[in-house]
Image (cartoon, rainbow, N blue to C red; front, side):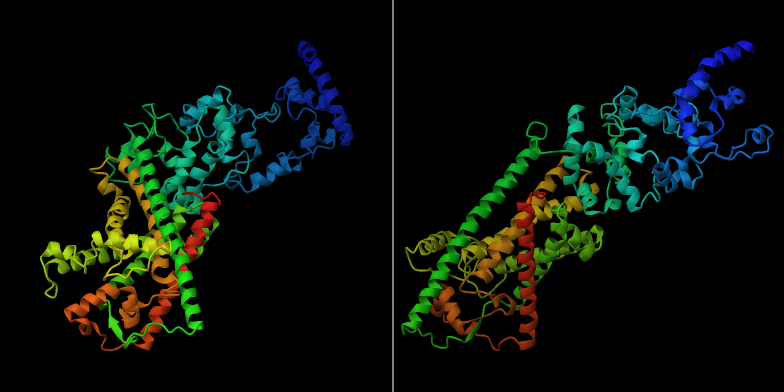
Length: 618
């Protein structure tokens, strides 16, 4: 017994030297050495002195012990230590945590309260604490994160990096927004840190490519509950490199991993590049697809925007010249019955054009926020116009269905034009390249050259036949667009079906094609097409012919003089005279609809331009 006391003396002296100032300062009369005289069998004096609490007196925590005599007689009731007296921040975080809800208190984790040392950012100590209870999460210790932390890499993810130290929130319903967001948000915290990834030789392409995917865009828009997050593919704790046979993303395990969300996934389906980029070496197919689509987009806009600007300026000059001629007393060329109305389109053509407008607006309004998901206006539209990205998806698919309706209707009308109509002469080949056809022919080359000469003040403005070259381009673009946008859209709409016979990387290709072709279509329609039909000086603010199918004779002669001349030679002009003009109510409603469509289109164009100028996703 005496030898035990002698061994305890140095530790007691050390404890007295450390704790005495704190005890005196707090007014505590009981010396820690006195306490250890009885409790040395439970508390090591040297360990306590070296602990994070070593500078405190025993009564700093056991505040109810104020009278040593009463305590020794057992007359003082000893309560559980209230850590919150000192650890206010930690307590406030713990109070709202899932641990507090389940009655897991400070001492349940900090069982070594008398020997506890400061963790000094050593994540190994955190892991050691957590696995005292969460030993079932053994997958973490064998994961790439767990092994790295155990090896001393403090950049690697430990329990606290994802779940925090004390503010541990409940995950709640596995399908809830908060739960689904957690699956990705905590991973981004480290993997989006370029400096951290660089010093650990980890590339950030995973974050970049995820955010550009359908899953990532929904996550960024604030709707993670409908898409896969990082942990859904890589698991929450057992994250392993793809080459590891036990990894959830190992090629042998991918079907099971994908099947969690896509029950009919096949080995072909799993060929999808989850983090495919435009890297020419790693993903040559995606690289060249991107280059081809970008080239198509840039070249189309370059040609037609120059065409639009030249036309805008030349049309403005022409209008000024006409105005000056009137001021000087020169009368315009008189057209007999110039305001007599003729029929240009039939009701079925008007109806199909209305379908085109409706479907295009639905597709644009619901698709652009997803494409530019990093923009505040995109998030606003998803939240306040659609309410949810799933609703936007439904509207997008409705627009797609309407598109298929007018596309197949256009094919039926084309077949009727080529093989059925009795009022047209010639065989189907002659009809296809005749003056009433929308198929491009040699005359269009002449018309283009004539317009360029007019743009450059080198010749008169040409007159046209039934269809102009820009109208034919619009019509042909519908067919190209259906194969590009429609085909890729169907693949993305029904991935499991197409994944049963197509390799998964085709979805990566389809995403690029669908996105860029949609951007081309919306940009073209809302700028070039709107100008050609409504914005050019001759027609501003709107050409109403597509809504009522009627055109006055003086416009007919000015714009399509060659068509009028052909009709006169055939003696059929009066067959196209309108029996009556469209009604006031109809004109008001449809014209209001037309102006709304133009305003929406221009607004979306401004938002797209803003997104590109601000460095938005593209």
